[in-house]
Length: 216
Image (cartoon, rainbow, N blue to C red; front, side, top):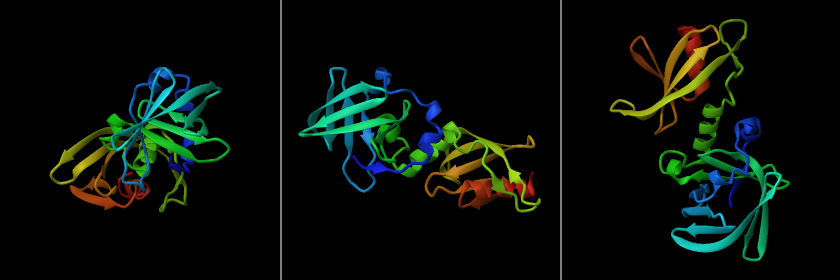
């Protein structure tokens, strides 16, 4: 499986399910995230220890075993792979390669079809859902470089003729002011409406800095 470095995983581990929650793991279709490959690989963990691996519809059989202590052993052909707990919820399964700071990232197929189809999308989803940057420290450009603190919450995903597919977030600044910002799915850019004009930003930090400067 392709593996990735993902610094956010240890920071949100407290929100994770444990790997011994077998009911969340088995009989779901977990898509292995591999952006460099054009193939679609699906892992299906079964109660009897059988692991079905579907590559573009062609299935091979392997074995898996939960070893306790949040570790999983996968036997494939003549090789065995040991993975440890990284992060686990109903959408994302991140398995840490033993003795390495890298993760194999698998997505529940129901979410993979929707929007979790790249490592960037997964990291963004985890950050916004579990608050890796719930209280980030940014440099305020107009007030003696005091830190800007805020809370951000995903409200909904929707579509409009003007923006196309987008996500809507509520942002609450530390002073109590609440604003709505948007993220366009096609290019990942953020938007904020100010004086009835849509102002576009390349990233979330720039958007919130602007809000603090002109509207906070």
